[in-house]
Image 1: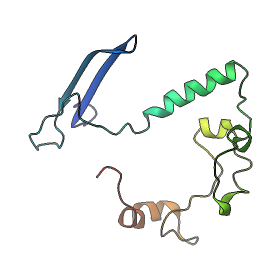
Image 2: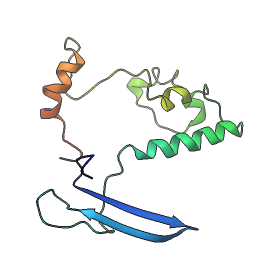
Image 3: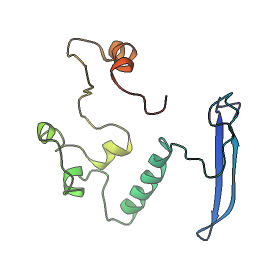
Length: 133
């Protein structure tokens, strides 16, 4: 926890579908004095990307999916925003696994004439709510 500057961590070990160990360490709010428990809810953040990537590559290994398969063909029932329907056509599984989509970065309050870095460091924090303050 100290090496990652984390206020808390929760650990659970499953075996054969059953929890065999669960423990939590730290505080809900650093310096707040309220300890976390194994029942405290945490945001998972980007950890699900690893599981999704492994599951996707297992489908590729089984020849059920290809890395260059188009997203619109792989998931035909997704409702793509009408304003982006054409730009979604070329996105493939490889793009998603490598965290690139080819979509334009559009944020609330963004302006075509501003540099993205400037916008993300100045305007974005004031105009878009934090997920986890």
